Image (cartoon, rainbow, N blue to C red; front, side):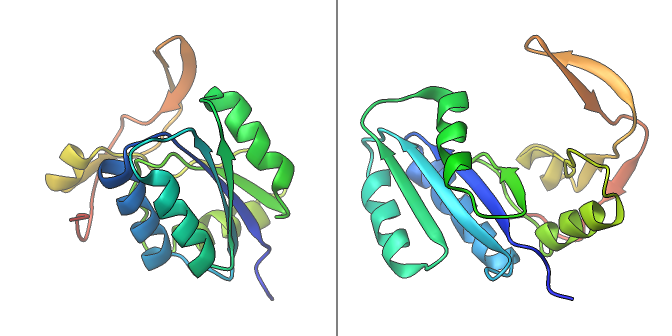
Length: 165
């Protein structure tokens, strides 16, 4: 059975070399591009990000870019991207992340197995954690981070096979 299309929305605002390029590289290296459309909302970058995104849009048939003339912020930017989305599922991805092989297939498989699920989040770890080859397992322990209620795992460590470079 074919996997459903996933619309991935990513915001950019400068940080081309530090975040956006490595993110895009990890996305295309670790994801079957027939599974997703990438909608990038640029919030008025001035560091070469716009030119990079224009080239990416020309080279990749599954990329759409919205170029804002001012920084509209996280919520408005994501809402712009969601309005263009064609996928059965929507993923909101920051541009400062590294994606592991088959990450998207695994998440879609979970949605297919858990049809009542409204939100699925992958493991999150920092580059420092990755370099020591450890990250935290998800469990239901509530924490608060910058005023937002979040669920984070604190019960066990898992070993990564490799770290992003």
